[in-house]
Image (cartoon, rainbow, N blue to C red; front, top):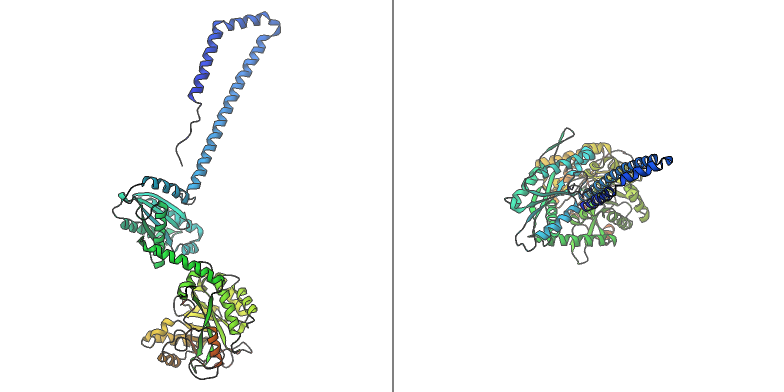
Length: 553
């Protein structure tokens, strides 16, 4: 808080005037012997009790003086309180309330001063470090918001404790800025490593050890920007480049990053337009029985051809749509179109559709899917929804309710990417799945890798024991097909049977031939499931059925 305070004492000129008038009045009254004249006058008119009147006036004058003095003192106190309140408001407007660090408004004021001081200088004056904590959300989830606030305060204290810092600020959330006079540090990047080590050092929260990562972008002013704000924006660009790399680190701004930033902004704009205009459409990859190659259905995969003719891969635009908050609209558009296309297929063919991890935190997702089915006029029993185990972990209660809503509506469920990431048998115990999809990472090398071969055998045996069909993703070679068939895997998909194709080609395929052999289609998706009674009856060795390359790749 500022230390400069405006004076609350009367101006010296005003005091001098009043003192001068008082001395002049005394001199005049003393010269004419005013007091003796007053005494004589009172004695002359004693019968009027003028002395008592004069005494009363004197008492009243004294009381009035005391009252005025007290009022003056109270006014000064109120003025002081107002001044302190105004200073507090000004301080709050320029600082973060939690960490008491300067905020964005303070940074703008600092930037104006930096621009003025750096005018006409040819060498950098400041090093700007933009920081973003990695894994802060997990800390909040584990320790609550109180623990998260404590962590932010600890980070703020560590940053303020670093030598040579000109300013440390919090720009919001888990984002910080450190400004350093370049002349006070030996090297810009080495000081960035010092900041990184300080932030990522473990700390205690609620009697537990906690640790966060940190992405740091570095820029120099005026070397990396004509204005301080531009240089800080460039440091921010470098910081996001670090985050995109997926690891903690420090990165110096490079002008090439501006092109990357521009391309990303353009891609975001194009993606938003494509989603709103329904320009991202479903393609369909065949799902087959590994036992005889018959067609069982298709998986809907998102495909986007940008307006300049560029094919944008799902691995690029699906995560971006998730980040931009477009994934729900995109998914609804895709599902509605896929259901309309699938209505034209033979009635025993199924439609497989992926959900992202983020969507499983949407409490009304089940209602959205049922509504899309209703609008398209597609039976719920022919739709299979693929969910990943990571989606079940992030929001377990919400995900459980969503899956229950879908199953109650008659939608099938498939556990996607089984064997990778967060694989847990608890999911198979808590949820009723119609299919287990073996991750394609195991399929790529199971022929030559004994351990992966045994894992696939164990998954298939697990599926047989639980009476759940198993499916393999990414089958590209006939030797893989034969190996999986020998193991007893029921279903599969991959380039061997056909890549994702437009709706017209998929329709032709359903009316002509099966992907692998010339066989008439129509086999139930889950060999353990009796569609008329919805229960297990005379379990037999199920027919295989292959898996997709995934909506995100």
